[in-house]
Length: 335
Image (spheres, rainbow, N blue to C red):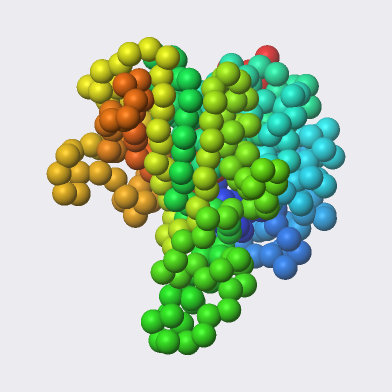
């Protein structure tokens, strides 16, 4: 089969190339597409150099499956046109809540892929949502989730390469005692936290917070009550989340740990000692979603607290899209 990546030179595009190189998917041709300024440049894939094509000149019928990793504006304009010629797996927020577009996390709701032909588009969930539902799914199956309260600690890579570069430059300027002028953030990000990701919407929430609520309901269960506070932190890669989960049924902490450790994509690292937990730095470049600090909520007999960490460029973006493609090819494509 032929594949294409739109936005091949960006953070997620490059990660998608890396993951495809390790994947068992048999790729005849890989087409790499980006903006005009990248046209003609070359990127290596499986020992061969592939020349980047410009989006304006690319023929979407060249590939059976196309990954979009180029941002919302480009996706909004190009995906509806491209989906007439190729199956789209889209990383943007544009089509996630479309009732005719499956929003898929393969470990959680792979059966939703069956409806992909309605628009020939499959949506990839928000990075902070993906790592959370991977952990919530097995717990919901066993104990029934009533309510979730989540606070996120999201790395700057979730906003793109320019914010990553700015964190580095701001850190140098701060340590040198220079004045800092933020370009990609609402306030200084170096040695600071910003409780604001995406635009503000109704009732004082941000779009990022509403994404977590609405996407979780669509992916997992519309009956789950969820509230979120999303925070940008001065970390390069990997998102962390502090999650409080209230169950319908009674539970045992050791049983919770056993269930999570056996669940696809999850790994429990939870030793109650110094360093017995996972941090964003350690989660970087891992395909796993790590769960630490699992403990009973001392204020609620039917609730637990957890610390969940995952590489947002991998499971939160590129890895999830490749896993979608693998599942699509295995169970549905061409049938």
